Amino acid sequence: MTNETPRGFAIAYLEDVEIGPDILEYMSRIESTFAPFGGQWLVHGTLPQVLEGSVPGNIVMIEFPSPDDAHRWYASPAYQEILGLRAAHSRSALAVLTGVEPGYRAEATVAQLRASAQSGSA
Image 1 (tube, rainbow, N blue to C red):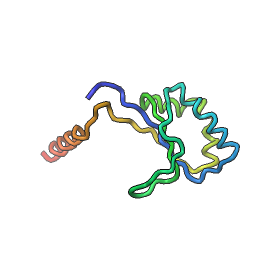
Image 2 (image 1 turned 90 degrees about the vertical axis):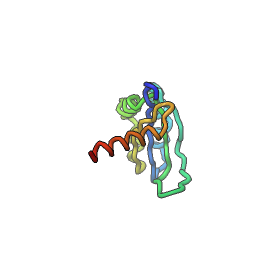
Image 3 (image 1 turned 135 degrees about the vertical axis):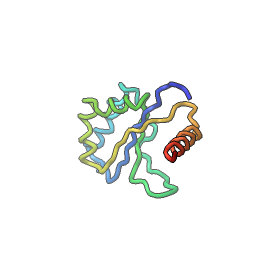
Image 4 (image 1 turned 30 degrees about the vertical axis):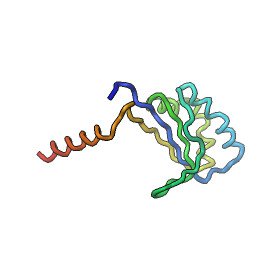
């Protein structure tokens, strides 16, 4: 693996969105809040095609250069100023995810888990 910083992702699940002036203003302003932190759209308001289980509502995903950038965006005065426009007119959840490093392979995690299991049983 490399020593590159993993990318960060903000993912939101939106349900019962009341489309009106406040949501439209939120949508019009959100890009200007994440652009200074290197954010870019990956998914915007897509209804998932669920193959297993259930996923609430529409999904929004924004990619950032790092998880720290995603956290700085969320805490920024510009985003905090518009956050209430969404929160008051939808049921939603928002989380920041840490991406994997370039070249990541699941086998590396499997090896770590096996090593932990073996050292825990000794």
